[in-house]
Length: 357
Image 1 (cartoon, rainbow, N blue to C red):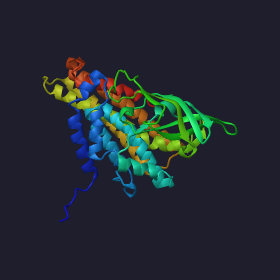
Image 2 (tube, helix red, strand yellow):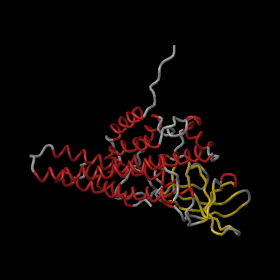
Image 3 (cartoon, rainbow, N blue to C red):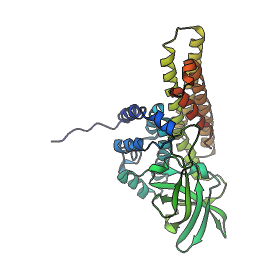
Image 4 (cartoon, rainbow, N blue to C red):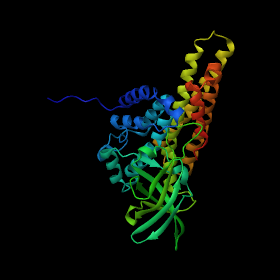
C-alpha cells in the first residue's frame, strides 16, 4: 500500500526549523558559556534533511528555494545564533553552487550530488579570502602545493570539505586566485583551536591550517585575477548575504521576544511602551531590508547594481538588528544584564553582524 508523504512546502521546512530551534535553545547557553562547538546541532540538521535540502531535485536534493532557506536559518537563529550562523555558511555554498548549475550550466553537479547523497557539510573560507585570496599555491607535478591559514572557518569541526582558494604567481597572468575544495581528512589539514570570542562562541570558527596540501590540476574549479571583482563574487554577494543576515535577524527576534516576556511582568508605563515600539520598529527595519535582499536574489541578475542593492540591504539589516538587541536590553531592564539572560548572549552574538565583508 502506498503511504502519502508530506509535501515539502516552505511550511514543512519551517516546522522542522521550529522543532530544531526548540531543542537547541536548551543548550545554547551552555555552548556559549563553554565556547564549545554546537556539534550535536549539526546532527539534528543532518537527520532532518536540511544539509542537502537546497540541492536541486534533479541532483538528489529537495530543491528548497533560497527564500525558504533564509527563513529556516532565521528561525534557528531565534534560539541559537551560533548554529544559525555556522549553518548559513554551508547553506550559501550549496545555494551558490545550485544557482550556477541552474543558470549557468556550471559543471558543479558532482559536488551537489555528493552533498545530497552523503550529507556533506561545506565550510567557507570567505572570511579569509574575499577578493584578495589568502595563502600560496605553488606549482608541482600534477597540481599545486597549498600553504595557507584560513581564519573564521565556521563549522569546521563538522566540515567535510573546505571551499577555499590560494594565490598562484602565474608566470603569464600574474597573481591568480585558484578556487578548489579540500577534504578535511586530507593530509596537511589541521584545525587550530583559536576561536575564543565575544559572541557567536558556538560556531567553531577556528583557523584551519593548510600545510603542503596537494590539490590536483583537475580539482581547481576556477581561476581569477587577484583583488578584482569577478562575476563569481556578484553571485556570492547576491545569494550569500541574505542567508548570513537571516541568522542575525533571528538573533534580534529572539532578543525581542525575550524582552517582551520580561516586560509583561512589569507595570505598564509610557516609557516602556515607547521603548517597546522603538524596538519593534528596528525589527521591522531589519526584516524589510532582508526581504528586499531576498527579493533581489530571486529576480535580479548578478552584477554591480545587484551587488550594491544587496550590500545596502546588508548594512541596513545589520544596523537595525544590532539596534533591536540594544533596545531589548532597555526594554527588559536590569535583568538582561545577567549572564543567564538570553538577551545578554544575543547582545554579544549580534555584534558579529559588523564583521562580514
